[in-house]
Length: 180
Image (cartoon, rainbow, N blue to C red; front, top):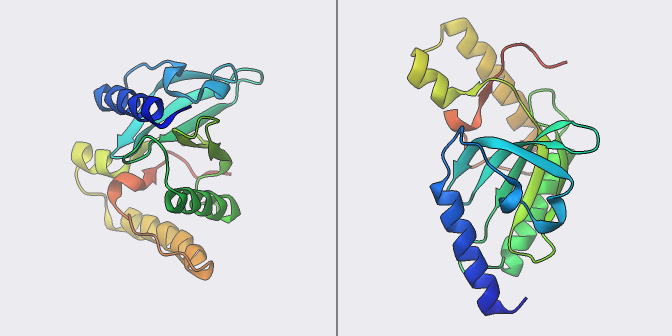
C-alpha cells in the first residue's frame, strides 16, 4: 500500500474511532482485514486518544475477548520507534503473570501496518473512574485491597524494568468477584 493511500486510510479510521461511544454496537470494519473472519465484534468497551477497545468473540470457539486497536499518530503508519515500543509493551504484558493483570492472548500489526492490535481476556465489571463517578468513594477496606492488587502488578512490572506511566482510575477494573 502506498504512503498516500495509507495516510488516507488512517484518517478514515481515526474519524470512525472518534465517532464511536462506549457501549455503541460496532462491526468488524475497524478490525484488521485479516482478522475480520476470525472475530465477531459486539460493542465498544472503551476508547482513548490512540484507539479503542471492542468486546468481540472468536468465531470458531466463541471465546469472548477484548480487542484493542491502536492507530498510528501521524502518517498513517507506525515509525520504527513506535513499532518497537508497541512490540515491547505487548511482550511485557504477555510475560506478566499476575492474577490482578489482564491476560494477553495475542498482539501484532495488521498486514497493512496501519493499526496494531492486542487481544486480551474480557474483564467483567467497570473501571474505577466510572464506578467513582456513579457511586462515589469506595470504603477504606476496599480501597486498601484494591491498592494492594495494583501494587502487586506494579511490583512485578518494576522487577521487569518497566515503569507504568498511566496509572489512573480509568485503567483499573473493579470486577464483581475475584478471578480464579
